[in-house]
Length: 102
Image (spheres, rainbow, N blue to C red):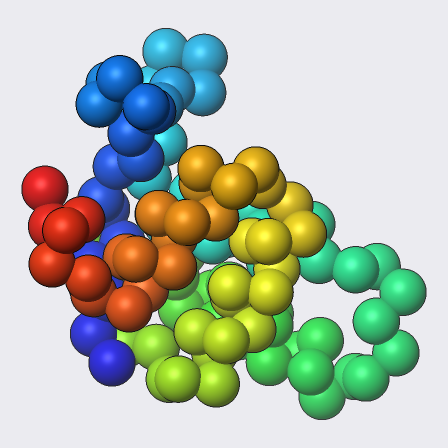
């Protein structure tokens, strides 16, 4: 599935969520979640798959081709790393919900 990764996150006042002075993007949330994944992960194949996905996202400009299995894994990781506001928007972006096409 093609996913737009340079979309922004918004707070409850419809203002862009910022990290310091820069607005946070889906690409940043996903790569940060992959980098902060469980360090005690023992499944080497799964850990390497996450590394490959990290490289794919890092090297993608505006759109990344992500499988449904990767999307499920990303949702799990984002849920562990971020609050409900970021997690919910991430799910909407990854599922290409119309309400979050900004």
